[in-house]
Image (cartoon, rainbow, N blue to C red; front, side, top):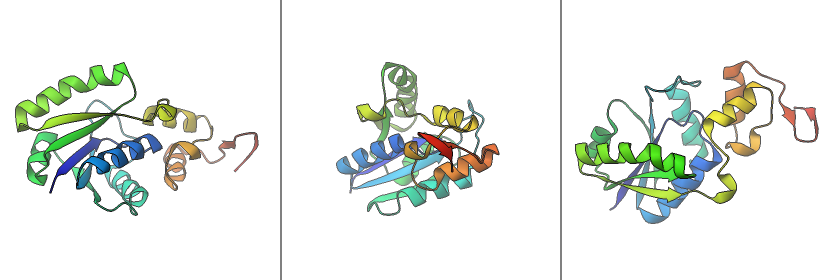
Length: 169
């Protein structure tokens, strides 16, 4: 059975992340969505919340499970028995940021990283942008799976997001 790990901070999980996980699932028998802490980022949502939101978003997808990662991704990959790490790319900047990590993970674990180009209509969807839009009361419901927008707004203390075309929710 082939296993792949899709790592990320998922702060929050977005429809872009779901796109990559579903593409990975079409290539591997099992996909482990690895919710990690990123030492270079200050997370909005606690790891436990991110894991729960990802589990809810992927509950109906056979062959996908969600786990928190403590420590090095290379160690997690080894423990799960994965044959690959799958990362989504929106463009060249993502590639430039991901290559050094892919090389380090290969160095540490021997596992290759597979890059999946995300859907072009989702290239603008990034967790950081989702949080910025929400922070200023903008609508994010179409950028994240159901239930995630409410969790982001609650964490930000924002409760009156404007719906496209007018009124508040």
